Image (tube, rainbow, N blue to C red):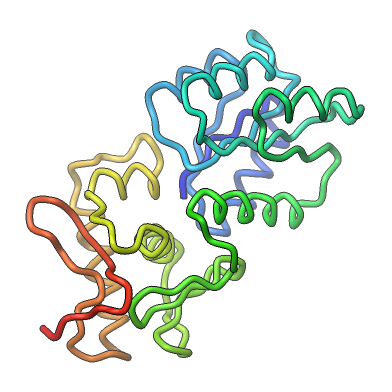
Length: 229
């Protein structure tokens, strides 16, 4: 999943990015309101982490623009403004959650996972499709009950396909949600990772096609329906 972190404290921003990278998230960063809106207007994100005390454009005004443009975007406010009135203003202006500073990183990560599950209508941390399961809290994939040795990027690809099971996902959409904005969308990177995931699944399932290629359209995982190659 791809996140946008809007935080003007650069040291804190680096720490958050480092922690979320370890969990396999792709993250763009903005250090003021203007930069945040520029990134938001030209990229696609699954969730936005927003500090309210940012320069140039106040966080609440950034939030209002985001909500006017995309009513479904998940926005988590991360702010030192801890007064009840500030929390209420943030939530009333469209934030989905509010975490006050200082904060525990594990709590922040859990809130992010919760919002992303809500985005894709998932209630459990265990999500399945066909013969594959993923644990969104531990970032682990399974064939039946056997763990698959996935890289962080491979897990991110599999997670997005399972969250969107029974839907054809274009290569461009996968790249937009799993990689950084600067990546070359015309590269063979995605094909390489898809091939690697298929090989690892095949070690447990044999010649069963779980991730299907739809020629000219993209990839799909269909729930409870697999094809013999």
